Image (cartoon, rainbow, N blue to C red):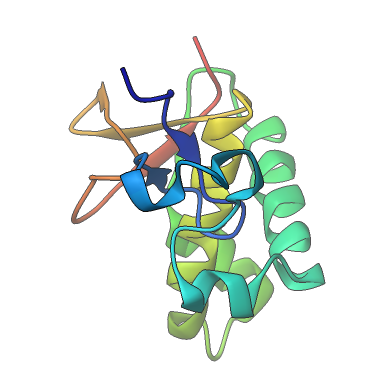
Amino acid sequence: MPPESKTCAACGRTIEWRKKWARDWDDVKYCSQACRRRGVTSQDVDLERRVLEMLASRARTSTICPSDVARAVAPDDWRPLMEPVRRAARRLVDRGEVEITQKGSVVDPSTAKGPIRIRLPR
């Protein structure tokens, strides 16, 4: 039976075990070469902090959109920050600090496509 899957340190997506990684599975941290090159930058850590701060400043039951965080960071040029905010949210989901929802239901952040909302765990 293959080992349990893990989460990519950079993008927060699920990494499924592959036979070619059998000897190195304990050392696998990234899902792709792109994630290995990108890693987790200081901007990524800042975006995680901003997501948590924005959620803390709102009612416990409220949600935020990744664009709310992106607009708070760069009001005039926020669109390039959308994917970095989504990556930050996926890493926070892996640590159990937030949940990602679509249409009010919690979804798997690795497979969620389209608009998402971020909330504190219930």
